[in-house]
Amino acid sequence: MIAALAFYVFAAILLASAAMVVSARNPVHSVLFLILAFFNAAALFLLAGAEFLAMILVIVYVGAVAVLFLFVVMMLDVDFAALRGGFQRYVPVGITIGVVLLIELGLVLTGWKFLPEASTIRFAPVAAGVNNTAQLGRLIYTDYVFLFQAAGLVLLVAMIGAIVLTLRDKGQSRRQVIARQIARDPAETMVMMNVASRVGMRDIPFLRPTETEPVEAGDLSNQDHHEPAHGGHG
Amino acid sequence: MTAFFQTSFGILTLTVLQALGIIVPVLLGMAYLTFAERKVLAAMQLRRGPNMVGPFGLFQPFADAIKMLMKETVIPSGANRVLFLLAPVLTFGLAVIAWAVIPVNDGWGIANINVGILYLFAISSLGVYGIIIAGWASNSKYAFFGALRAAAQMVSYEVSIGFVLVTVLVCVGSLNLNDVVLAQRHIWFFIPLFPMFIIFFISALAECNRSPFDIAEGESEIVAGFMVEYSAMTFALFFLGEYTNMILMSAMTSILFLGGWLPPFDVVPFTWIPGPIWFIAKIMFCLFVFIWVRGTFPRFRYDQLMRLGWKVFLPFSLIWLVLTAGVLVFMGWLPHVA
Figure 1 (cartoon, rainbow over the protein chains, first blue to last red):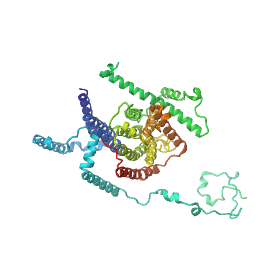
Figure 2: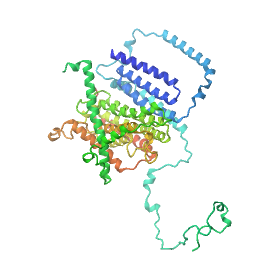
Figure 3: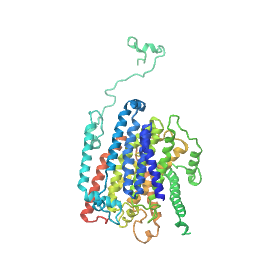
């Protein structure tokens, strides 16, 4: 009873916030509604008894992916009025595509049938007394480890590709090389000089405006033609 | 009486009482943590610290709280009102709900759930939202800088925290926090996993935005970062959240590495002291180190912080994870999985 009530509450909030993601005016609000939707999906996982998936959903999507979304969206200055400008023009195309997708979906759903022996030929029968975290681990890391590794490899390639495409060091950024900084030795970088007292020095008289000739603002531009306005000659 | 606790209303009452039983001590501890921080920093700098309000200044936290409550909450005219007020509530709320799974003694958690560690990790990774939302909703340049810095920083340090957690879990064989502590009956994990203990503690400093990683606040660079526009109670909620998070991270450190409620040696004078006392003592030790670090180190520069997270901690914790798993498999020490 309470579980069913909780399911409907979470599902309703999930759908409402998903609708708000696409309809909110402010892109930051959209991302925040997306986060709310993630949370409710996690709650639905919890209700279904998949606590590991629920936590991973929160950690990965809310804790990392959505943070980066929010990070980017906050910095973009999206002008949504301009984006909505062409709304009228694209409505017929959009509606056509939507209708075609709906018809296809209907065709698929009406023709969908389960084999009568489907439940018996499942790949991973549920073992009794094993919690779902351990079961997931057994499936992913024992039974399907090569597929898992292949997926990881694909992601690695994608990551390296993204870095190669976007990282352009023009050689202008000044980087701190900590190893070099620590390896610096006073004996090599500093020269200790023993300079004799008052050798190589010249007396510069004290600079102060003369009282007889007050400096005027206009005079500063063509000061070269005048006697220097500052300083007395020692 | 026991029959009453079997009814659904009784269960609800019991849960509320349990929640109060952990939240009230945590909040009281947080209040005195601010006092302890000021006293310890003062001692390190040869000052006396707060000493006027009450004996030894012991009522200082309450005086501060009353001052915060009495002040006016200023909302900037360009701010997004709802999000501006939501951010501090979120920060504080997240810091408190994480305590639901912390076991204070054997089985003494409000919720002894199977994925306790993941729950803690999830909650602590959400803490960044309070800061980001505060920075954006304030509609102020400095606040926004603070938000951006916090986002980048917390995402970077979560990765290494994740690997440290996985290393501990490989040694435990369970995601349950109770099992994590019980697995340390023979040896506390900070001895075999010492480098991971150090990485976890430094990452915890970064995760709490504590000095020397407090670049999100950085009062000498970006005034107070994300909370520059906050005043009175909203500011106090950020403050409460930060200190509660510190206590939480200390509790996590002691559960994961310092044996939770377990005494250091399982012999008579140590076993006389009850488990919760040991647990609190370990938390207080970690908190002292937090304050000690603050009194000792200057703030990291932003690029140095990123370098430490991605180029030092991440590869090192990854290698140490593989090493730990390899040793466990090779020696046949892998914990038996249920």
